Length: 443
Image 1: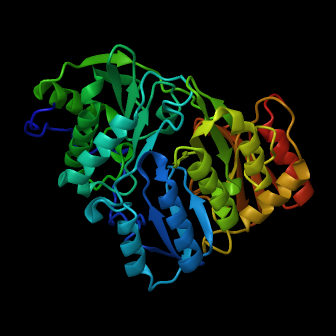
Image 2: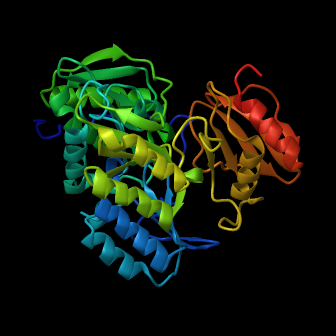
Image 3: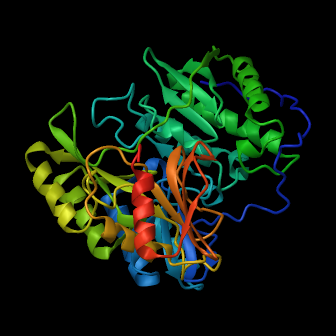
């Protein structure tokens, strides 16, 4: 195990490119609610996206009794409850604690961990990351220093397939064969190769070193730091070696990554998993309870929420998987890549957000209806934003649809850069065509 941390390393002074935060982190949680135009918002951290069916049902019950009646998924595999009354905070906290979703009140906003949703289910990957997840979450909740992380700081646990390694987490662990793991800081291609059994402790140590570096500039994430990620990486390597870990530097390019395929996921054992999407990342009570009923009655009683606003139900008997997938599709969930909803995301838009210039979810639905079933072949994800902030947008290559005062602007973004000037339109038919065309590579 990692020994006690040695004294802090000296990091360079702030560079011109650093981001200085003049105010505290106001990221919402389950205890600190955010006031939105549609009521208060609670963000419930679900490390690794893992929920028991009972916990999932409890969240649905709270959404119906205290909020807008829908369960909203985030791009980090967390749950949001919206439309809450300002007076419900005490009851909400009490119920969350009873359900086991608040193991530490001081750490509830910093339990931001994404993990490979199909780890251990499909025979891919280098190792099952559940042990990493349990160890990291427990150590974060036990750490006084970790309570100082911002609600935006993100850990990623990748089983080796490269899915969540692509998400730009602040600290990423990626499994390798031979009992090793790679520790990535931010989006650096240089990684620290360490023993896999020591990986959760190394990830927490990296977060602590980040806090020391951030103390003078108020950075919330690695990308905000003076000088970027490289000085932090060097400091982390020094601290790991000082703690007695063998550490080797290696080059591992950041992968493109991809969400789990939708449909039946065949595993190496006697059971399968079901992978489905939630249209625009939200589910009403009927859809959500269909999922939890399948998990409880036909699976192993668990849901895995994905950073792509989907849900994986593991442990389904192989003879029933196709039938149950059809039932989920009949309930309105996205069960295959040919669905027009596949890859479609949006911020909350009007009327939930005062900054939004349009009802982006309603407009996205109109465009989806106009498009119909998608042709076979790859399609870029599309994200509809009500303003320039683009809250929750994907990474990598995607179609950017942003509301403006003169209509929507449609463009393709690849690694932060636009392929061409945006197409601007306020006509629904023209907009649907522009989005569909942009999503199809080579058109």
